[in-house]
Image (cartoon, rainbow, N blue to C red; front, side, top):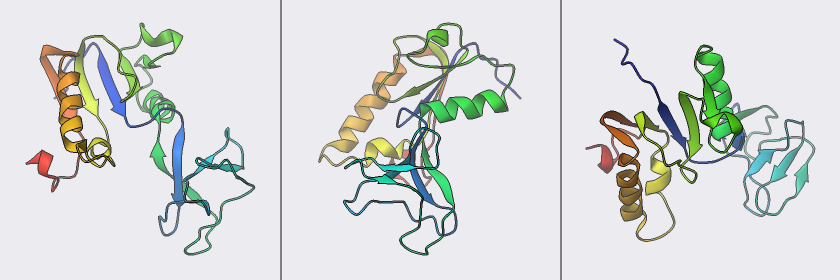
Length: 170
């Protein structure tokens, strides 16, 4: 049974389109020699290191030499595009764009959460917050989740995507 929702917020870890690629065969994450993630450059065949800016003309897996990629991590723009295709009657928007106020399905990175009230908030890839480099990343994650609750109607629904064996899900 569908729950009637007027405004839904989808939270993803990053802005943009594809924020990391991996090998389509072995799923090895594409990395530059400096250790940075390899990302697509402006919908072209070229790739760019997210850390040092080195440009790559093509992708070649460092593990199995396969040349086909898959999106490993999707940003807010890519998620919004995929939602618009999946739900053609929904008004899908991205936080920070002009159509944001008219949207009933709004996509945002965790960094750009709007100050609005929603019927439902979906938190994708929640482990992103728990796996921070700082020693207090778990406390920061719980604080962030609590702050999202202020954006939720009293009768609203909060959905979190996280591994079922993660301590937070128990």
